[in-house]
Image 1 (tube, helix red, strand yellow):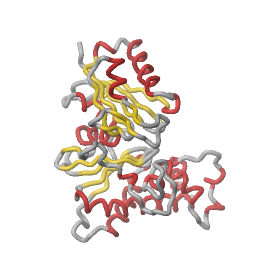
Image 2: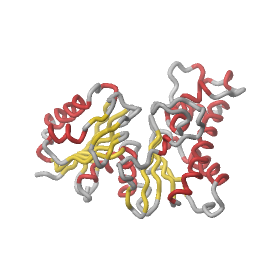
Image 3: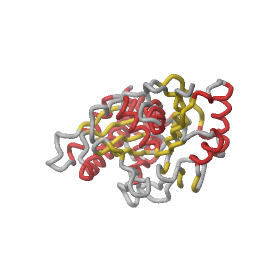
Length: 311
């Protein structure tokens, strides 16, 4: 009996996929490394074989996919800077051909916004912006309970708003994009590119391959340079939220992903800097929340719900 939807979240580092029932319960989930799949076909085949071995295929109603630069209208991933799959990738068609099921594809941040709106910390919100803080930085914009796609399907590329036109080189080919500073990758870049008197004394410099998680952990342990990076990241993100508020006047920005899981202290610092730069008409009206779902669940749930509103 066909009772399950397959939700897939494709990230620059990790791919998560899970089975979601008609009540919206995530009943099984698996994680893969994005770097293990040189072609989209190899990913589709790996998921197909896994579900075949688990005798799951006959229970599926459809497939929802969230992916970087995923175009809801065309069903393709188009020129995603944080994926090895270059150019235009007709992922919807590839899944449909292998699975012979209905497939819907959207931007990964849009999928996360759907999941957060239906199952998470945005259930009470009509107008909000979901910010994904992972390998890159994405956004899902919700106005009056509706996702904003734009005329070509690419609305919500908040990570590629430039905050310094002479700043860090981005994977998109331009300089100074927000995600080069405030994504997990951007936080790591700050370890090496941010000037500070405390840098030489920081234990971060002893790590061979530091991560954003390391930065937040060391900051919590009192490392002054790590604390400076966290504050720098919060400042830039908060200032950018203040600018974005002029566009849609959201009730809240909801932070989702690895950096968001570092805790409420980071959200408070983002809100502090946002408030300092908001127009007076917006001050004291906009919240900064952290996702209530696990960093992979929201996007998987949201992707699955694309296929059926019940899931």
